[in-house]
Image (cartoon, rainbow, N blue to C red; front, side, top):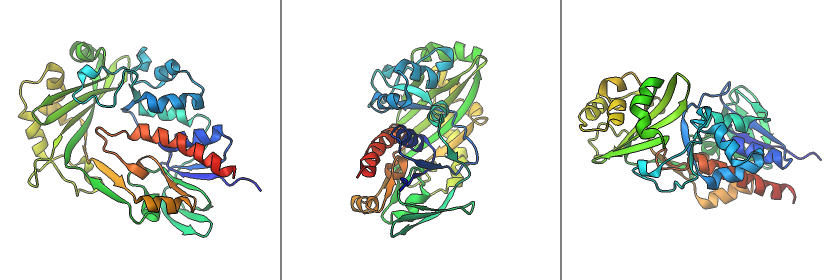
Amino acid sequence: MAQQPVNIIGAGIGGLTLARSLSKRGIPYVLYERQTSIPRHSYGITLHPSSYRPLLKILGLDEHSFRRRVAVDGQSGGQGNINTKRLVHSGGIDPNSFRAHRGKLEQLLREGLEIQWNHSLEKAQKTLTGTVLRFQNGRQVDSTCTIGADGPHSNFRTSMAATASLNVLPIVAFNGKRHVPRDLFERVFAPIMADSNLVELRQGDVVMQVAINEKEEDQVSLSWVYSRPSRGSMDSLHKPDRPLSGATEIPAEFYEEVGAMKGLDQLFEEVFDQEKLKTDRILHWLMRTTSIGVEEFHALACNGIFFMGDAAHAQPILGGQGANNAIKDGIHLAFNLSLRSSL
């Protein structure tokens, strides 16, 4: 009898890593993604050697080639270097950690993979032999082994794991993107960011972060983050119960608070200029974590139901290791599924 495929819900970093790892081991898979086409993830993430080095063998690349291909400054010959002396919090970052462009990393992982686009999971139900997957496009799939890799708001987890819960940490965080002309970058940003694609500054309880997303010949894409602890129940910037659609609703108090900051270094003064911020694409981030009971995890696994990455153990965007854990989960899960398939 032909081996039944592993059905993977979600073609993000974790799902793609799992699919590449399964393919390397000769295990059939079907990879479903809710997006109708390749998403634009044009921002940087920090990768650590403990996660990306095991991936190199699967990709058939040496470390130098891998970093040149996916680093945020790879197009200009860089390696995505991070100088920990430029950071407020450097925990977990070692000399071989680097800034990768998520879109380029996912593009590399997608090579050679077949992806079922426009497959948004509507619901899943347990059966005697596994699960039945129902997608919004009308397709229905009977599965003996299903992996939920569909992120912190996992529909698969909602359908399968009764004890799962999302928790919001008492942290205020806003993220923005901006393109700056190359001459402005060289004049204002390069003197500080020449040796680090990520820099941070603390003022009081506020931490400001500026990161390079991508360097092009005529412009540089930057991301910034403004974060601090919540200041209590009356904090107008902390909205833990806001809907997902509320992420783009930026209160006037945010601009007022940023505008009141004085004495910033030139780079941070340029980025966190009150008027310039108003032209940026800004998101209000919630720092979420996920928890699922261990006993339920085990019971679901016995029925061929697994979770990985943020669908299993979401971490806050700031200070979390979401991308790194997704890579590790994909590699480890493929190994364990190979043992399972050989029984």
